[in-house]
Image: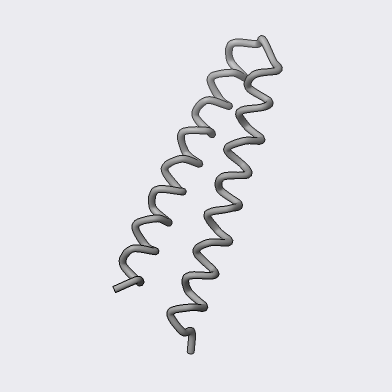
Length: 64
């Protein structure tokens, strides 16, 4: 069985990964000029932000 601390640590780890991927996509986005690829990377950045927000909500839920 997972403790609350285990879940918090797991969600913290997931959030760090989402934040790292956001930064990876942002760096790539900033370095390329092809419009189609920039749009794809911008969407991936939005997805990572959404994922991070979902994880934040889960963390708040389990903090109760």
